[in-house]
Amino acid sequence: MILKTTDARMTDDRTLTCRCGETEWVINTAGGTHVVCHCADCQTFATHLSPDQVPTDPAGGTHLLQTLPDHVTFLKGTENLGCLRLSPKALMRWYTTCCRTPVANTLPRPGIPFVGLVLPPETQDFGKVTARAFTESAKRPVETYGMARAGLGVLRRALLGRIAGAHRRSPFVTPDGSPIATPTVLTREERAAARPG
Image (cartoon, rainbow, N blue to C red; front, top):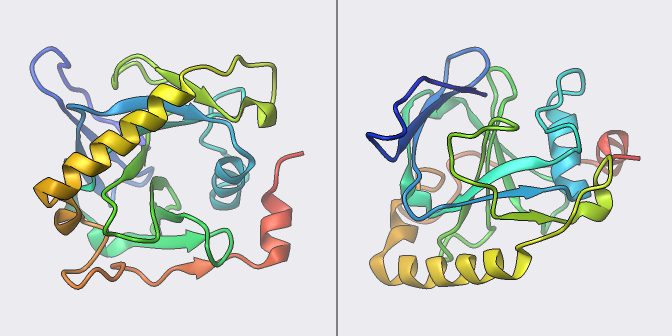
């Protein structure tokens, strides 16, 4: 994805577009946590979407802003959103169908307000990286740090967000809690083809 130029000193909002520009969304970064996940599933998702231009950092890390779903607003292209799952019970992984740009990860149960918004790799515009997780799957040696703090942040944010009704303001679900796009589950062959290693 592409980060539009912003003055980070003036606003918490960051505007992203997909690779082809047909989908555009704004992330409010206030209270969010910038983490990097090196897990095999995140790498599989990235490779499946774009095997020739994998949107991860050199160590295979996916940069994410962990925040509440009502902190993202789509300016255009909501109809382009697609959803896939690596297995029937896995995370909901969102991307643009126009150019297969990764967008976000959400939980299968929308009642728990959480979203991990995919960021441009090596970005400096979403605050300092506070955690690197599942580095045993990294493409090169990387230190693991900050996982406990990040996990507590997710729980605290989800609890407060639930009380505030953030789960009812997610752009990824309809008013009745159904995903706005029907999830596609990868076949075992598709998953194996994109798996790292």
